[in-house]
Image 1 (cartoon, rainbow, N blue to C red):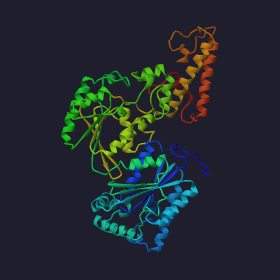
Image 2: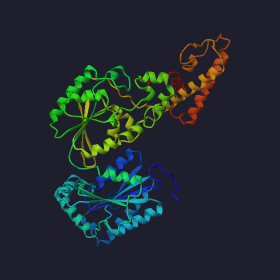
Image 3: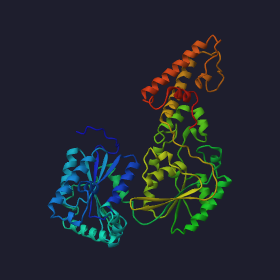
Image 4: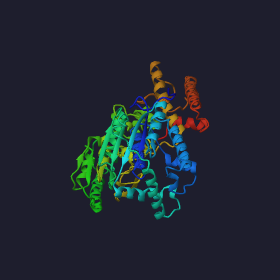
Length: 518
């Protein structure tokens, strides 16, 4: 039985995804893209490339002779890193094993090993006989690999073609009859045809659906936020306001920019909100509205400024800074919710060629995190300024990004990540204690404490700052005891969190009394 607890909620047992195919058939491209997608939707996935392990074992590559099937010494070396790569990956819910795996013998050993470890196996075979696609892949990726460092390109190309011939001698594709009990998808010529067999569970069906939507046709994806809105000018989040005068000016500039790009068959997508629709109307191009592209729902905090959220919902404000990706606004959404809402958009984005998406800050962050392979921790803090177009061009194993500012000024809506870890804890503790002590204060039916203003609609002053009562006050001792007790609780909490090594207590208490505007 497995000792570790599975994080993945989509399957009762983890899955080993095994790539199959000759070199230069796009296996690494598929592996990286699939891993990026699965991590983006919240399924912990790791990819292990056998070539990296082989290079560590051999140190220096000499020639295609290493891959000859009759080279027994080399064959033993190649089998060793295969086992290491497979074993090392058995820690995540999903593992992608990126290697040729071209023989039936190797695939049988992988299935046996995975079964022993409690893993399901799903094969992804890439079959390509289109000479143009193969040549393009070799030119774009293979001749610049670490195997051919400081090697002449023509020599590298010739050697790699001979390596492919070595693999062809022993290559046995997955067989419809002999392998009918295996779970797999066969991809022919980068998506011109598919063959799917024996899909076992939900996660495998999602993998199949994703792989049937991706393509390698050259294209560009343009991402832009709407023009500056009236709510942006007021510093308020959410809402459904129209564009400000500068926002209309940006929309016109965006139309001019898009025309200058001379993009063939450009698709334009917007949300259902006024500010994206008004921005798209200046383009002079038909656009499609997606409800899934609507901005994150801030629930009870809609149309608030951040200062108002901090004043009216201090605990919520602190909790969001603790884990911005998973925090859900009361009666609203989290970034995690937004990612799941945007999954159909990603699928359609993968199917399309040239697309301009006019969207919102949180939505754009989620799309960027997928395209640029950013973690859930990084996602909520990606910078997506107003009046700037991002042009993303897919390349071999990622995306090339160009930022184009269209020279129309706008407000800055970006909030930086809280910079010091203890500040977040102090801020959260402050909010919790304010609530706890104010409730205790109300229960005691005490209407006033000398030296303290109790008229604040948010509770007495001592809930917000800990200035001691005047020395002559008859209740000053009680007030100081409460203050001291609160401070001791704070210190104990900080020590428990292991924060005492990162800040001194006086600084922590200063932050307690005067919460930072972060």
